[in-house]
Amino acid sequence: MIIRPAHFGDEEPLARAYVDTWKDAYRGLLRQSFLDALSYQDTTIQWVRTLEQGDTIVYLAQDEREQVVGFVTAGRDMSAGSGFSGEVYTLYVLPSHQKQGAGRKLLRAAASALVDAGHRSLIIWVLKGNRAAGFYRRMGGVKVAEKATQLSGDTYGEIAFGWIDISTVGQDPFSVSRAATE
Image (cartoon, one colour):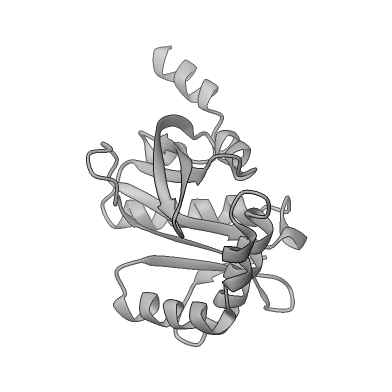
């Protein structure tokens, strides 16, 4: 598994990974007509814009055939008043490559890049019901907030997982809190 920064030329494979992971992760959670309307072409345009702007951290995961199998995006916290300085906006891995370490490596790469950009804490929002919530707990994230969000005219609940100390990403939250009190 190769984890590397994304660059121009990665837009189409990133779009394919985005659309395919969304259709899997949100099946049964989001309206099916919304998921069916996701297109590689429109998503490729969004990736071009993201890479052009250059203010978003983007890493991708490639398998042994150099196919994009996952990605992470991050930057400054977009949640007003959350108390966290950095945010992971998206983290997705194709179902065929889950539970092989790609998500962990992508999250750590984003955390490291956020530290390099001067961030010391991290938040990520997850749609309620998304099975990724367990992953963020295992990575040391602690539930810090909830909110309602609008998507395609529907309202959904989101849960925020946070790391007050970004250097603890990937560690058991209970061992971190025990170590702080010892």
